[in-house]
Length: 266
Ligand SMILES: [Zn+2]
Image (cartoon, rainbow, N blue to C red; front, side, top):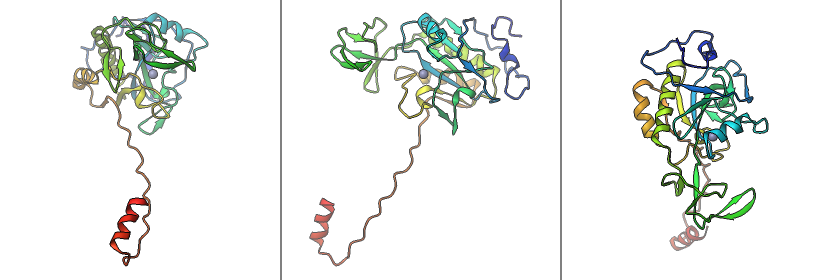
């Protein structure tokens, strides 16, 4: 059924042991190269309920694949997509990849166990010439029109300004591959309820900023909405309501002027 798909293990996996119904025969199976990462663990019986998008903050698809295969890195993702749209699978879908770290989604922690992680080759946020930034605890000044977080010259397409920063844009080919892959995964895992970003699930809040300000969720929504009824895009975190400060009641007999001044200084 999935003859041109390398990851046959996923066919058997739904978390409940039941075969995965394929929603539509029109879903194209994207061609992916398999390059295994040693970093994965058991899903502990959890059903796949989410797809998490990331950016790699790196120079290339190849460098990320190398890093995820490096025993020192202790990180991985199910898929990495290059800027040109090439897809590499690194972890079987039946296993939990190590992409989310400390995280929570819909009240559930350890999102790795219940999600599929997709990395997009992209530098993430960029620095402008003259801007001083910290790298490995050292202050560094950007000497090029735009710098990557490593201090190297940024040579990609014109950065996008968003959230008071600059970001590397994602090329069309990469969006197209991501959409194709996402549609494919949705057809394989009808249990998926959320498609969101790493920054929306990482704990503590603000620890991560990917897929970042350049990522066009609208594009994903437009392409995916017709085949998916779940949540697509950033998740607004509802903050706990601030505790009410009890106001001390002042005696009503106080002169008005005195009350006014109290208001000003208290
Ligand atoms: Zn990430």
